[in-house]
Length: 64
Image 1 (cartoon, rainbow, N blue to C red):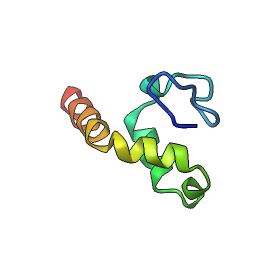
Image 2 (cartoon, helix red, strand yellow):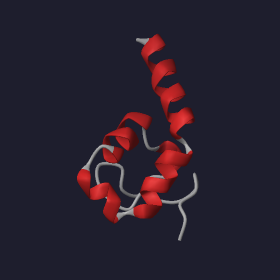
Image 3 (cartoon, rainbow, N blue to C red):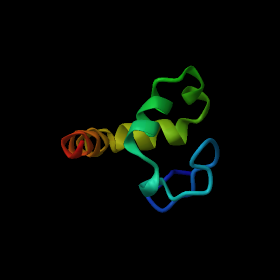
């Protein structure tokens, strides 16, 4: 089952939120964890959206 922006986060601090509402910094943190390889759908979702996640973080830093 592939993950989309409308899919629900299955675990963690943002469990129950739509993927599009999970902060980019959290998804990138997940990507750096060893256990991510046990969740290939989440791994693929993050890789597929990598550029958008980086952009979200950069835009967030400008607001600070």
